[in-house]
Length: 240
Image 1 (cartoon, rainbow, N blue to C red):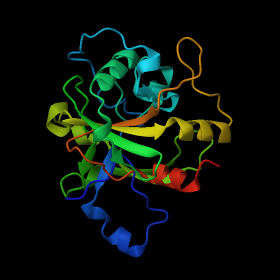
Image 2: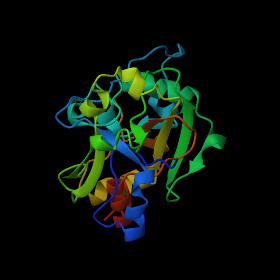
Image 3: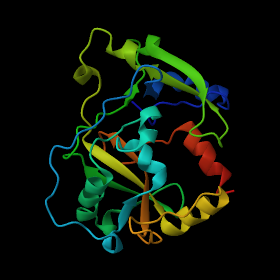
Image 4: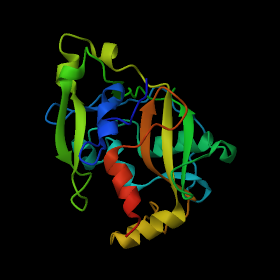
């Protein structure tokens, strides 16, 4: 069965053929006004010395801070939120980084790298649409931030999915984490286009790590899942 990223299915611009096949796709799980999806905790972290910023290949971009519990923006985020600190997360992924494992994304500046999820208890939050759970589907217009156009999204209501069930029965622990990366050059361009300040290190210096982690998906397969409609639309618009 085909799957789509977590919570949204684009209905407002779908063709009739797309709509007719939508029942075979997957939907994201919504936690709107229902509490967040399970926030992850760290099981074990590699105990090497702290990686200096200048030696990092990967850093968590500020856009991705919402996926870490240490940041206030995580309170309203409806995807996977990690309790492990950004510092520890960066330590693990940099220890495991191998440039030969980079996989092409939707554009030349975008790459994916998949790592085994053996250091968090992040659970999958995309499920196939079936006759047993289709009654839990809901829809609404949603934007990722105040500068983006809201897109009609379809999602599962988490509370309905969990009715009478244990969380582990519905959301298994993810086997992999898909780290979605943007090149430093592209991040600089997009920040400038949106009037955002350039990313800096803890020392206040300009960030130089070649790759920024802009999103993290918890999933069961080591390959790219289709992106959400809001992400597809934003990417199609370009940096401007």
